[in-house]
Image (cartoon, rainbow, N blue to C red; front, side, top):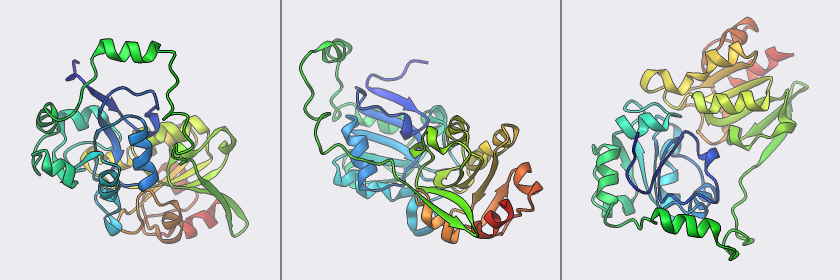
Length: 284
């Protein structure tokens, strides 16, 4: 599939690298987050980003990133979670319909109801596209990139450890913030429960994981990873996006209400409408 010049597809923001040279990012991740996440996207040379609205959810957490991207001078749009599968960038590109945007996107002439492809076309005259030759020259250049080595590089990978009834758990805002030391952990995270998030959970070898259902959305994409996680031996559940904020692991722990459980979770007695804290107590 040939994409317009300057466009890159990524299923997860966790896959975005500092050496990215594509100014327009079409991503399967949610449009939540904080200023540090928006700064990280800007640090990776992104000028415009298209993300999933994740059901909008509690306190509009699914689109909270729009204001943060605006503050970082990054054009940002969210697509309706029922128009494109969360965690699947190709579907965001092919089927995503804009549901929310920041003022920078509005100023560019993007409108609610536009397809992602239509919106990207409108950016062709205002987004500076680096040619392939310039990209290669930049990659080969021995000149040090002071921006990349700056102390202002955003730091995002944060997790905390706590206990519920003597059970050790790891709390983090994103499944992408885990590392090899989290193998075997019970994880409460603010990520959606889509396929890309499930891949990260498997990669880190966690014991159990609780996600946000991101409004469930098109083709049940917000909870789609649960079955494959069960097959991989990982207990997994999602919580209602209206009960707890996406990209807020602590809120998932404190207020999350279970919406979907995989087979391994059901085998431990976890059911819909339980709180996350009630569910964890069954993991002794």
